[in-house]
Image (cartoon, rainbow, N blue to C red; front, top):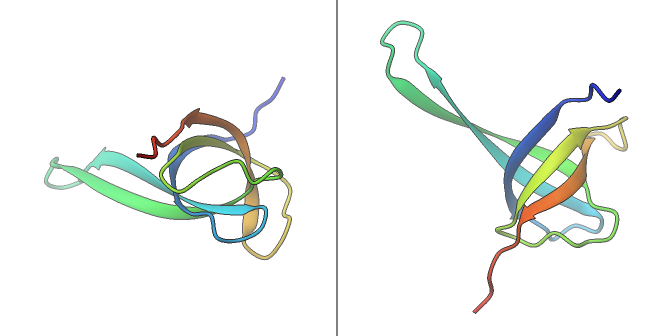
Length: 84
């Protein structure tokens, strides 16, 4: 049974070797005003084969710390970006 956290987001940067930066956006109601607010956060994820490209939607999963900032790994690419 796998009980690691998973998040879905968009690749913001793929310029590093075996690392991608993804932006995860979440929507939640404001505690006082009840209006829905968007909040985004960046995560560094390990991409072993350098398959992710900027604009892809990917699923990341919690992993053991690989460096100072990398605590996630790419599980799958949900949606590839279409290049024209």
